[in-house]
Every structure is written in structure tokens, then in C-alpha cells.
Length: 99
Ligand SMILES: [Zn+2]
Image 1 (cartoon, rainbow, N blue to C red):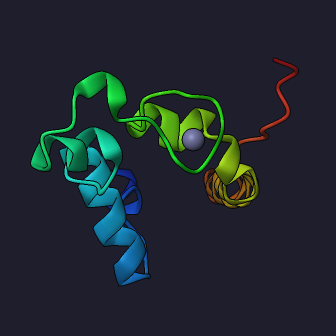
Image 2: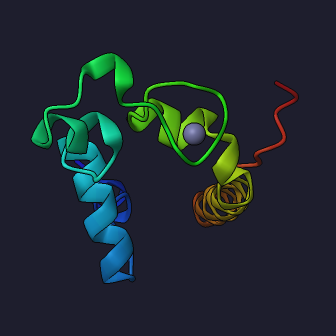
């Protein structure tokens, strides 16, 4: 059984980024859906303040939909693409399957 790939999935050099990933995965990120609970803000009022979409600031909104984080999301996609291409190169897989 190959455990190397599993180890790569958590290979993040920056301590701050590792901590944020752990918080997002564990539901402890400082997003309004969580912080609102600490301050007893009604769930439907835990709206994102970084954009004007009027959506709950939860993990999905933060990672996928918030228009206030478009540049950061583009940088994340670029880094993910580089990482996948590097893994494909290491494994001898051609990523251009036409899908
Ligand atoms: Zn937003």
C-alpha cells in the first residue's frame, strides 16, 4: 500500500496556512457562521462582510463564492494546478486527457 500520496496532501510549509486549513476542516475558522455563535448572533444574520452577496459566511462561501476573495482564489487555483501538474509529472501521467 502506498502512503506517500496521503502524506503529500498535508504538505504545507507555512505554519499559518496549515493552521487555517485545520480550522476550516474542523469548523473552527473565524468565519461569521462560527463567531456569530460565540456572540449569539442569529444564524441568518451571520452574513459575509467581505462582499455584497448577502450570503452566510460559512466555509463553502469563504472558499468558493465570496467575491471579496477572487484574487486569493485565483492564486489558490494556480498553486493547485502547479501541484497537480508536478504530481502528474512525478507519476508519469499526462494531464491532458481531453476531458
Ligand atoms: Zn463574501
